[in-house]
Each structure stands twice: as structure tokens, then as C-alpha cells.
Image (cartoon, rainbow, N blue to C red; front, side, top):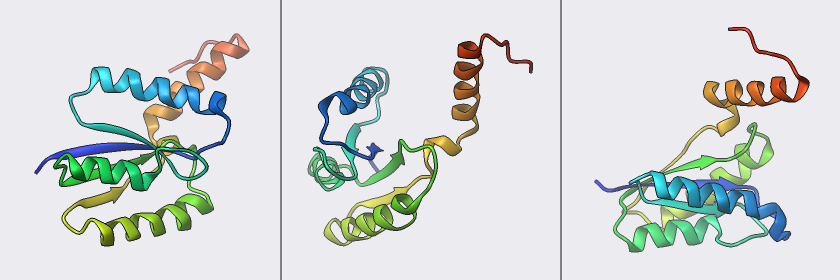
Length: 126
């Protein structure tokens, strides 16, 4: 079964806000062999619907959606799951899984702590 990954950001009408996500996507796509799409939940393109359609058209049968959010608020508890359910109905041949947000991953917490400590001029003790 072919697999793809969708990086899901919130979205903004401001291109400067979107730039870091586009750069992240570009850098990861160059490093990974997994088909990778960047999508936005709202206010921006490509939308989650567009990203799923593109993966589906390329023969992907299973995709995971990784929210680039710090935490699971209303959007990740209600809005995105509703989008994913609609996409499952529209693409019944494709298995879609919504992953926990990156902010809940221990490696993300460690990386963020290191950045904060560096900005504060502190060394992290392990």
C-alpha cells in the first residue's frame, strides 16, 4: 500500500505567514522519500481537500495528516476531524489518519526547550 504524508498548518491570507511552512515542506521533501504534501486548514491553498486529491490522483492509498500545531484546540478536536471524515467519504479507497499535533511529540518539546534556553542564555541540563 502506497503511503503519503500531509503536513497541515492552520492557514493565513498573509503570504509572509505561509513562507516558513513552504520552506519546511521544501526542505523535508528534499530529504524524504515519502510523498509529502503541505496543506492548510483554512484561508490558504493548497487546502486539505486539494492535498488529499493530489495524493489520491498519484495512487496513494494511505495518508497520515500531521498537524503543525502546538496543541489540539477546537480546530483539531472538531473542525479538522470533520474535514477528514468528509474526505474519507470523498476518497473511500484512501485510508486517512489524523495524527496528534507536533507540539505533543516529545522531540518537539525538547527542540523547543533548547531554542528557548538558547534565547535565554541558559544551558539545558539533561
